[in-house]
Amino acid sequence: MMIRIRPSIVLFGDSITQLGFSAGQSQSGWVSLLSNAYTRRADVLNRGFSGYNTRQAIDILPSIFGEDGEGGAIFGGPPLMVTVFFGANDASLPGGKKQHVPIDQYEENIRN
Figure 1 (cartoon, one colour):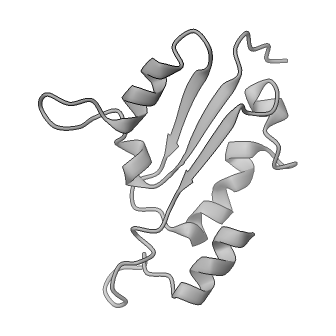
Figure 2 (spheres, helix red, strand yellow):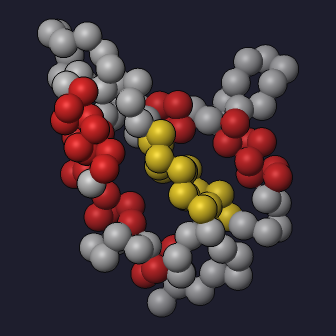
Figure 3 (cartoon, helix red, strand yellow):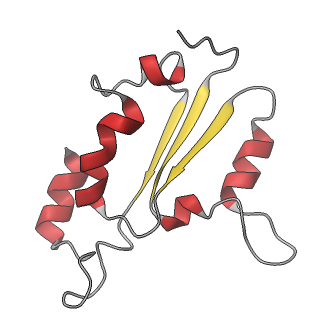
C-alpha cells in the first residue's frame, strides 16, 4: 500500500504536458513553475504522452487513474488537482496521421 505524505497534482495530456518541464533557453516550462509553486505542499506528477489524442487518452485512463477513475489506489488518495490538456493532436488535419479526431468525437471524448 502506498502512503503519501503530500497530496498529488496530476497533469494528464499530450506533448504540451509531457514537455512542460522544458522551455526556451532562459525560461522554465509551465510544469516546472507549477511544481515550484507547490514545493513541499504537493507532488506534481507529469503524465504527458507526446502525440496522443483524446481517443488514445481514453484507452489509457485506467492506467493513469485506476479502474475506479478516482486515483486513490494509485496516488494514495484523491488528487488535489488534475489538469487535462488534449486537443492539439486531435485538431491535426485529416489524412496522413492517425492523430486527427473529428470535432464531434473530440467533444464526446472530453465529456466522457
